Image (cartoon, rainbow over all chains, first blue to last red):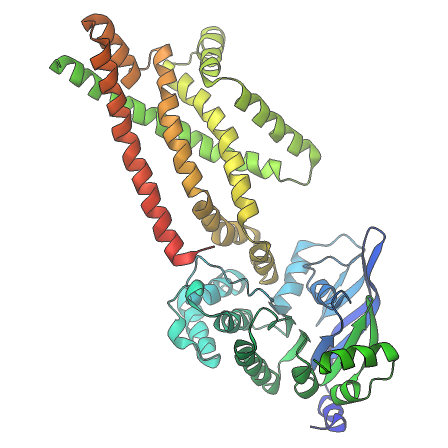
Length: 261
Length: 214
């Protein structure tokens, strides 16, 4: 898929996420500085950059797991301003629109795989147990784990747990999926099965932001790549362009370092 | 040994068990808000919880029961010996249980809270569905240990006249002059109650661990 085709694919889509002036600091230490970003429906964005560059922090600011110090987040028609008193129902609306997948999976260890996926549907969307279970089974089939439904997460491999976590987030029908280094805790082989599920999601038209160290994924699956450094967006553009011909020296250095490994 | 001694101590067993269960129930429930205050972001609440722990963990339970029974019970309110004992022991238990809960909360991975929030689970569900069952599992071994300790501490109630194992043993020793036999048998009675608690707790712990392993 060429960069031109990517742009065409998204041309008439509407903007579903807008970050403006997002900043975050811990005391004097500035972690994010004036980040502006918008994302169209169906767009897949990869956030890359050296560790400590603020990419995970930025992702966590989107659903207010980490409270930004400045700026506003808009998802669909929900707008949350970090500097105003944040109202609970608005925060809930925001989080309902966003699915999140963590580096450490964070499945609930005391529930079966099926309960992990069904319980949030019942509590958040008010689905009946039957309805939720049906949806959960369907999603488990989609991530290739229908036979794990009645197991506990501890009986599943890391790759399987992460696929279950993806199913759990998808079950709430989010508008956007956020992935926080979803394969960093996995060995390469298990990482592959998670990436395959993510690629399928992307091809199915899901809007996604992926913080990752998987350069191949960033280059081939995402539409756009953002390289971050020192809490700022260093460079961004169509994936293949940014990955092959970075303009800034800092980005060149980073990409050379990760590619030469 | 005379049948009289045997039956007298057996009659004390229900009282000992009731003292233990009721005090533990009071403490286990009261411990929850105290733990929540301890973890609160408001320093005043943290201070109150801290003070509570300091007071009720440094006063000997015996003294506390005396204060309630002879002090408050005599002057202001009519409090029976059983009530005074379970209130006293319950207050001490609450201080200790809040510490056990606090340890449990810190043992639960932060990712569990984050996942619950990211999924937009409502507040009650975050606690009841996600955190509480895990807390129960983490706190089970130390709580069981505490219950066994409490069972033995419940003998304090005999000093204000609750007819538990220790009280009846004391009575029997005075009337029969067979102190060694009587108190040795009373000791066996306490053991017979505490051993099953320890075994049950271990079985429950192993069962939960094999399934969920936090």
